[in-house]
Image 1 (cartoon, each protein chain N blue to C red):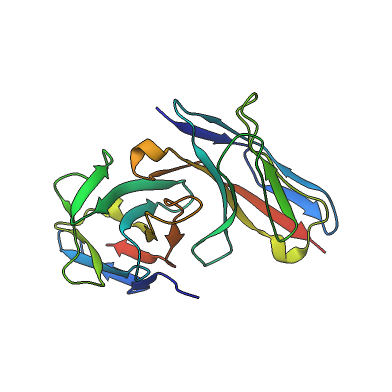
Image 2: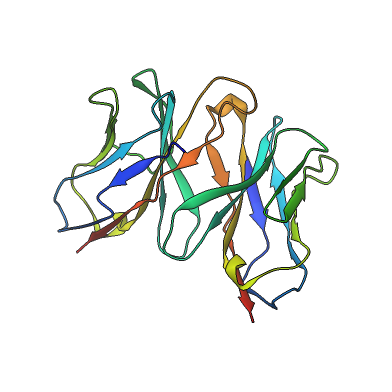
Length: 113
Length: 117
């Protein structure tokens, strides 16, 4: 079945550092790919998305490119802030499955001043 | 901006009791979902609901669980006889099912933390 694998955390880095969180997926169809963010004590917020190969999703300085050839959707940000400390979830949705989201395990990111 | 709301934010119940978690999806959305997140673990799909019936459900969603859309606005998840292992954060989500872009893009509520003692 479909699945998502993302790098384990926690990832600890200093303010203004470059952030990469790796995400790879397995899917039989042509999924849409998402990054969700969960700030401490809050629910899930959609950070960005990409619906087809080579699409680049971007939001709040974060970017991710849908790479079909490597089945990847890595999240990047050039200069993180303390406020980016959160858990980041990679997810996929196969349109043949009524939009059900399959989530990765989540990666906790801690940004220190 | 429209949002998904959930009540209560925290529910404490004793093992064996029935609980109902409530959600109000975004008003023009057609697809509804429940997910759960056991503390420290990944978010897991429970069930999707469309046109007043279940579209898909996971292995977790056994006979102890049920969902209902009792009126035009609420979407509920019922657990008939709670177990300790049902303790988790439960998220409701909805999607439009139509329009441009990804019709299945899901908007999540803030969650209900269920604690079974």
